[in-house]
Image (cartoon, rainbow, N blue to C red; front, side, top):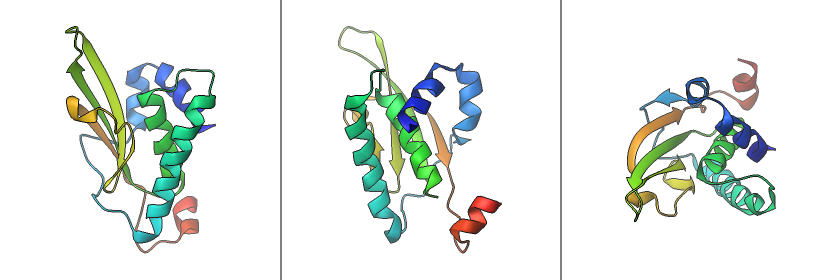
Length: 137
């Protein structure tokens, strides 16, 4: 379902999408709590596995939006990066990837070729609060 939502979000005008992505030009922490590592890896595997079963385009931005939403629901911080580069034909190419702590959750392949032009931090975790307190606030 998150991949479908990500595809729908990608089709929206960027001026309406960008306020929902997180804090512009900020990054989430470079670490995740030890208890969250397993969840981060599971989200990455799930998103990559399910993209082959969607009948719609599920490339880098759709994957990043889906994984971001899944991590947010689990109270895990992430940063969505958007980059641009020139392809071999000299045309502009774009790429999106998602990082949580030290892990690249989606979009790892080829990201080093791209120059970051935007980043959005989704800071959801709040130390000292229980899951119920985060959901209810």
